[in-house]
Image 1: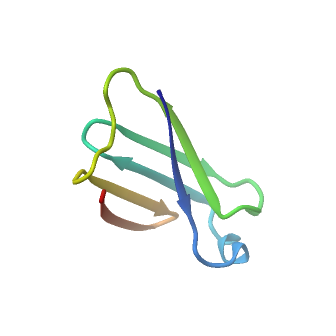
Image 2: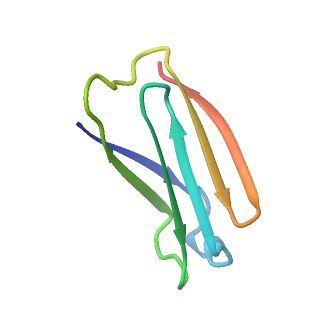
Length: 84
């Protein structure tokens, strides 16, 4: 089973030009993923995608809590999403 996790920046892509490195990931209990990117040039997209393959039953279902962490340079934001 192929899974895709997307982090989207809400602001303008120009605001990302000062960022040198971004790391993002999630932990949903039955599955998790993490990815880091270092920018050697200015970003042109404000969506960051990580894909993972999973074996077995790793579905995310109603009521599950997904813990998300995004780090950029020396800052970090973490939050939880509940599947409804």
